[in-house]
Amino acid sequence: MSTKPAALPTNLMEAVRYFADPDVCVEFVAKLRWVDGPECPACGSTEHSYLTTRRLWKCKSCKKQYSVKKGTIFEDSAISLDKWLCAIWLIANAKNGISSYELGRSIGVTQKSAWFVLHRIRLAMSTGSFESDDKLEGTIEVDETFIGGKANNMSNSARKARTTHGGATGKTVIVGLVERGGEVRAAVVPDTKASTLRAAIDGNVEPGATVYTDAYMGYRNLRTGYTHGHVDHSNREYVKGDVHTNTIENFWSLLKRGLNGTYISVEPYHLFRYLDERMFTFNERWQDDQGRFLAVMAMVSGRRITYAELTGKL
Image 1 (tube, helix red, strand yellow):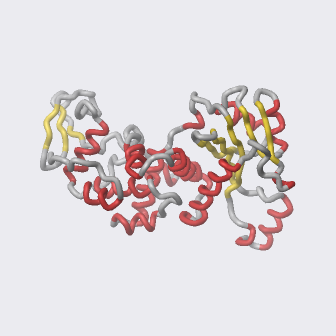
Image 2 (cartoon, rainbow, N blue to C red):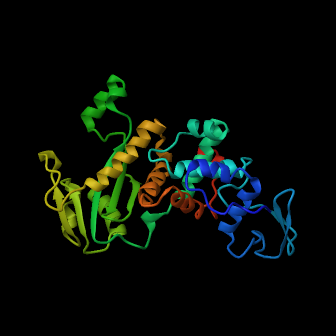
Image 3 (cartoon, helix red, strand yellow):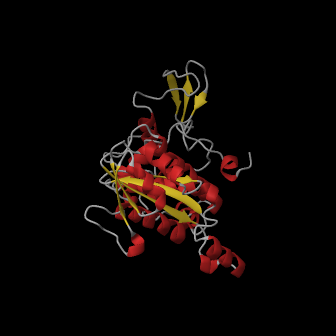
């Protein structure tokens, strides 16, 4: 295998040059995956030989061959690692996301392939924070938002139904929590009932923490178990001393900017994947481009999704 350049790339131009050599790509991914050297995915043996011309390892124990892609989001992909790594660099550092059409043009693959690549990368970005045992502490802002079609783009009958039954009718509900100075967590939920919102908060926030919300009635039961404060947006009250929900609303703005401006149309059953992407970039906002790229690369192993799973054709 070739010797990689001395320094890791710090911007896109450097990344394209850095990963232009296939041997450098393999060595880079291999060192991230296997700190102590390649390990056979089949039997776990570290005894191997390297087939230079094919860029494969051969296990001396079970005799099976394996590539650096095995057991990662890259598995069974004919797309070369240089394109994969540049795609990860692009999406990890795109504040408003990157469409499959744009990515396809940028790395030289079809729109269909780019769409699949993006969803695999979003899988790597997923931290599963909403099911985490580590709970948010300190001051927490909580809010819900609705994702769906705009009334002025609907037919007259659909617009009338939306007006009659409320603006959230037919939309997908997301509840979000953000720890001030910390991470954001969000998930698609079935409704905005008090029990649903309370379950999301209890599962993610330390008891006794300070929780700030808007004046929605569904949050009134937070008086038990938390220090609860709220602002009443209907009365144009947005900040009341330290009480506000501006941080979580900023996250909603970033999410919707990507959904409405970059991705245009997102199916409800894929929404959580786009949510994972935006949560990752928001939570890694303190990092530079290289840091965000390496953060995604650290999570590519042990994750895989097939095209049939993505399209519901299993």
